[in-house]
Image (tube, rainbow, N blue to C red):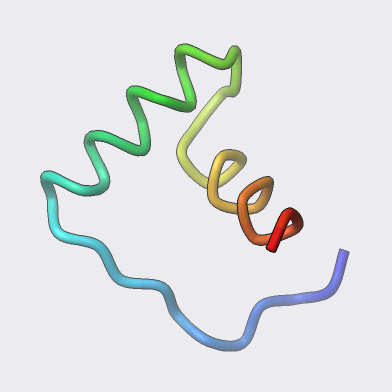
Length: 41
């Protein structure tokens, strides 16, 4: 996996939604969900 050099910013509400989706999909944290999404686009 290549190292990300551009920060990704979210509001607290957006991050909470990402964390919720990550947990629902069996991921440990929001970072895994974000990485998965970035790989898909």
